[in-house]
Image 1 (tube, rainbow, N blue to C red):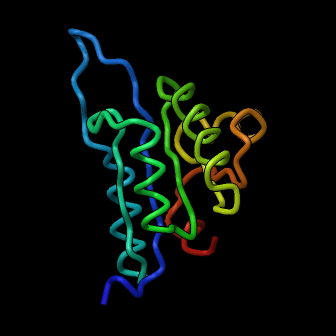
Image 2 (image 1 turned 135 degrees about the horizontal axis):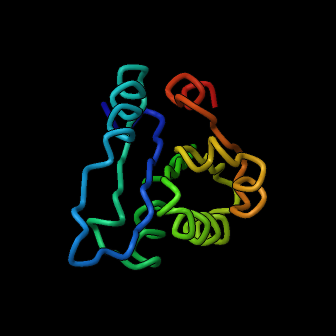
Length: 133
């Protein structure tokens, strides 16, 4: 029963697209989800660049699923969205730990942790670290 499995939500922040932008799937989050599912977790991937949902809709979904951890991944272009998203989640779900990952965070872990008010920063590959968190 997947309802009984511990739940983790993996998010990619939104970014403003223009005429030259081409949305690509969050492959890294897919790798993480595949690994975590094999380890016995229920994983939700929410790509906010593709799914243009409001903060309220996202918060309601997350509160309904009650994840034990929320992971947010971002390239530098997504950093402002990651920062804003982590603030919104922390305000609405202060007891749920937030882990940040991705290239930007790996290059600037201390700054990312401080500016995003997250609980953890994952540098480099995140599969085993997320499982341990």
